[in-house]
Image (cartoon, rainbow, N blue to C red; front, side, top):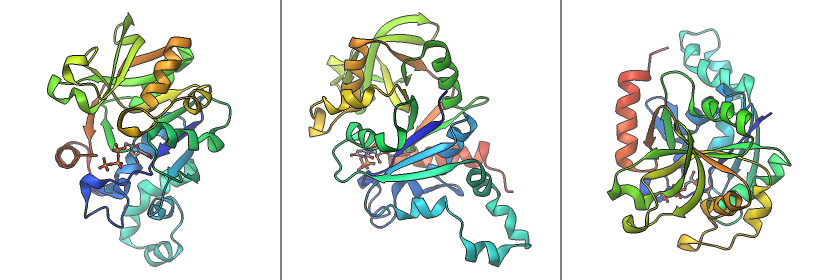
Length: 275
Ligand code: UTP
């Protein structure tokens, strides 16, 4: 079944400058935990223990975060502060971490294509860690893995968004085959509100079948001159089947300052507990 999860983390994070000048956006903490750790915990909860990162320049802090810090371990071993390391130790005990680089920032599709050498020929998940998802029970990836077992095709997570925000997303249209599950027949990246085929926007959780790599290779740059995963998925939907899934839970857009602040307040009030 699905064992691997890819994290494209090569982006510049310009919306958070100057904070992201020398620090990866994915390492910004929501309360006491870096954004990327929330995503990795969600993957591991879904049984995806092989974690692959597609990184770029200036992202070494991410690799260090998922590696042992001997000096720190030595300093705080046996003290009352050791408890603060428990969550990252749990992640490190369960996950295996691999890294590759995206040479040039040519878009999310291109970043995913760079992950091919970590994934090989098997279905895999993709997480954009700037979308922080909070759920009451099962995580969003767990929900999607269960769906994959049933349908065995690529799946994108979607949510309804207001018309004024639609142009920030990839948007789908499709035929509802079950409550909250759509067979996709149209997909548009960042449409003008009048061109949007629905109000169902793709968020940063995907399950992809490996034929997507060949499709991305054949996909020309689209919106913004970038190779768009949305365009590749549209081709895949025309050839076979792509599902859109209205996930259960709340998603925070931590790639924007407002969404990041909202997530911080929510996590502090509802999720965070002092270990
Ligand atoms: P964003 O559109 O949020 O871009 O990318 P960004 O550079 O991270 O942030 P801003 O817009 O400059 O503030 C969505 C996700 O896709 C990854 C990013 O790291 C982010 O997780 N990405 C995007 C890549 O890894 N490579 C790319 O070429 C483009």
